[in-house]
Amino acid sequence: ARQATVAAAPPTDSQLSVADTTTGLHALVGMFAARRVREQTGVGQHADVAMVDAFLVCDDHAHWAFEGIERPLLGGEIWEAPGGPVIVMGEFKWVWKCAHEILGLVDPTPPGADLDTKISMRRAAWADYLKGFPDRSAMLAALDRANLAWGDVKSPAEALSSPTLAHRGSVVQVDDRIGGTRPVIASPYRFTRAENRVRGPAPLRGEHNDEVLREWIDLAPAEIASLREAGVLLEEREEG
Figure 1 (cartoon, one colour):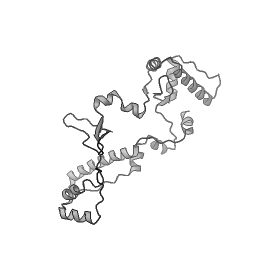
Figure 2: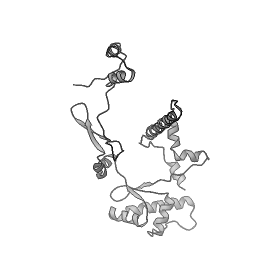
Figure 3: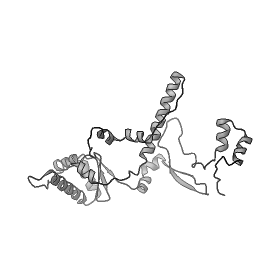
Figure 4: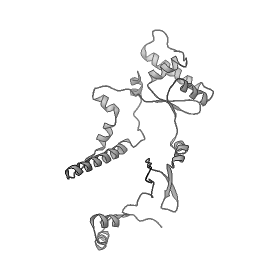
């Protein structure tokens, strides 16, 4: 039932760096695995991690595609409600069952209605039900009574002002390199015996050329200067 609804929706960008993030995480696991092999065998190796592989291995829909099944979207749906949109988790069949049996929402479908008619009429009835509450607290109380998982839908700006982020110190200010500061998101890791923090802004291009060439491949200052004079080293200078 939901397959037809989902299939009819146009493709959209997730607005999340899914492929970038999962590839980085899998690459880290690959490096740890290669290091473990080196510890056991004394042999190092290259680790090849492709974004397409990392993306698909984390895509639940891909596993259904192997079987030729167009899997319906089983996650939550966002509905208009008093005080702003709300996401209600679960396939709509389950949501309707809870709404009908627990909340007493009357089934609007006529006897003998076909499946598509039942789906569309029940979805419309559910949408009207949510919008019909006098305020958000009453609507959320009904969702809780039906034992339905829900969540507030926030804009990025609203999410960044979350009290939880303030408590965790998740938004930090860094030098913007033009005389002020700018906010960035701290890494999500918190440790009990170590400090994890943002140490500064992203480096300028070539900012650490000397340090890298000197410490990693033992170039002398004169050799680095020669590369710079020859235009080999690309560098961006900080203004002011």
